[in-house]
Amino acid sequence: MSLKALPAESRPREKLLARGPGALSNAELLALLLRSGLPGKNVLQLAEEVTQRFGGLSGLLHAQAEDLKSIKGLGPAKRAEIVAVLELSRRALAEQLQAKTLFASPGAVRDYLQLQLGAHAQEVFAVLFLDSQHRLIKLEEMFRGTLSQTSVYPREVVLRALSLNACSVVLAHNHPSGDTQPSRADEVLTQTLKAALALIDVRVLDHFIVTRDHARSMAEMGLV
Image (tube, rainbow, N blue to C red; front, top):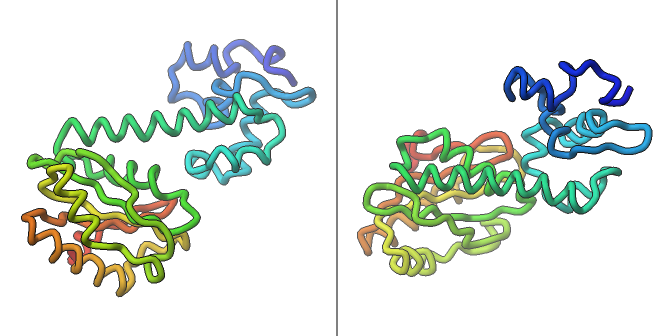
């Protein structure tokens, strides 16, 4: 059945305008973004296929443009639009963290880190540099590769903190395995960076272990 054959109140656009976005399913919201389907497959069916292929909306939000190429019907324009929505989400969360004290919005911190780091197939070490009021100055991905094999250089973190005039930092890295349990190497790295940054009077407030589905605070575990 085509969308035009559906009753007006069941079509995604009309449904949203009449009842608000909360009344729509994930597939219906995505259908509004995609706008058109394929011969024999309307846009709602295409949206349902996309969400199922990536294991739901969370998986889709972590998809890269290259990942979307595998789905017939997602041409360059549609892929670009999906990736643009993801980037807008990242920027909106970053604006929240720049506007107010970081720990006034712990949920936003976790969401931001998951969007930034959760989808990476290899380990990425990032630092959130904060001002004197614990507001975000900048997030930088500083090192890539398995952290047990690719060194994280404390000197580079210290120099970047100085150049950004940061007063504190939050450390973060992802575990592509999906396990948020900190390793012994993670604990050692945290203490090494704490000691190095203390020499320039910059505090390490937390270290998050990030996966697609969660971001675990080492500070909450008593490890920072």
